[in-house]
Image 1 (spheres, rainbow, N blue to C red):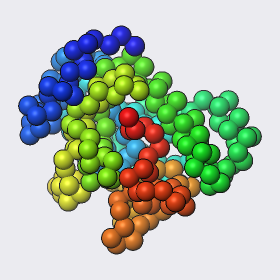
Image 2 (image 1 turned 60 degrees about the horizontal axis):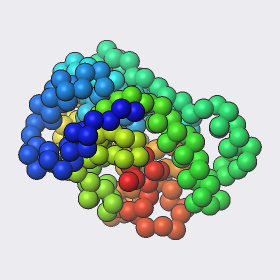
Image 3 (image 1 turned 120 degrees about the vertical axis):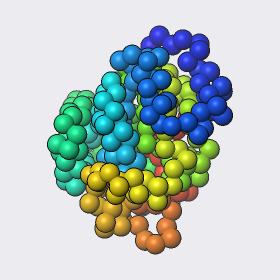
Image 4 (image 1 turned 135 degrees about the vertical axis):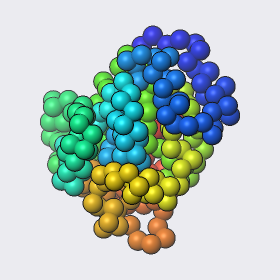
Length: 241
């Protein structure tokens, strides 16, 4: 990917300047600076639904895509469909390489990710990371729904970051939003959201890897709950530096 040296300065020079700037103002600026090079990855969680709302209502030239791992909840597909209908848009789906998945299942078994952290990370790599690499190819800006409340690790992420792994500017517009602010925006704008939230789910990923959480549990404790690891390390690898 052709990377301009100035792109890397976003993390250093822009975070303080734009910390309190309006999301739509920043989105318009990015689209002007990098025409047809700005993309948004949605997993249809509440943060992503708010971002989709702003992009769709403003008709910004941003491709909205999702990584369909093949193991998603039916409720996730339902909110995907409802979102397209409400806003009159089409969300691009990227699927993992079929041969890679076949080899993974042959090696691990269909639920091999339960057996070790290494197996789970390999599954995430095949179904998500390699797929994301294709989705971000030749793009300049990657918009995400990451928030600082999600985990101890994400608490230290910024509004703008340079992602060296994917060689792209990462824009986290809701990084400083609270859960209450996100849900308030959803209610006020009648934004479709995943019905699993009403059943105690918070961070929703693949169906075999996600469970509802109890009151007081960390936000991402429902992800890979069988692993004996610190909550802040519960990442699939998409957002790890």
